[in-house]
Image (tube, rainbow, N blue to C red):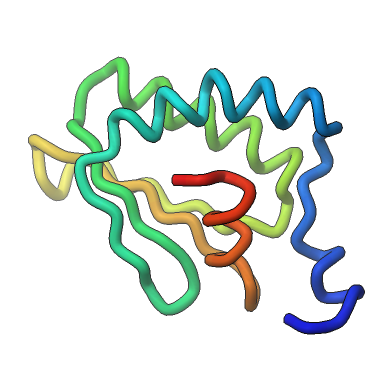
Length: 105
């Protein structure tokens, strides 16, 4: 992911103030609830307790992120382990770096 065209494909559509507010609220709350973070080949997988509140929060996160970061591929695994749920964020080359830099969890 060296050229400007490739980096432009991985950019958030939120304005800087909107993104900062999202990082301060929704993303900060999600980050505090992560039980485990595992890097995968094309992204990152997060483990959360499988509570109704967490399911609602992660679902809300997905609904918004798919609009502002349309390059993300989301995976939500609820039910394979009744105690935990899993959110996978993946996408094209460079997405793991974007998650670290922009999403921060």
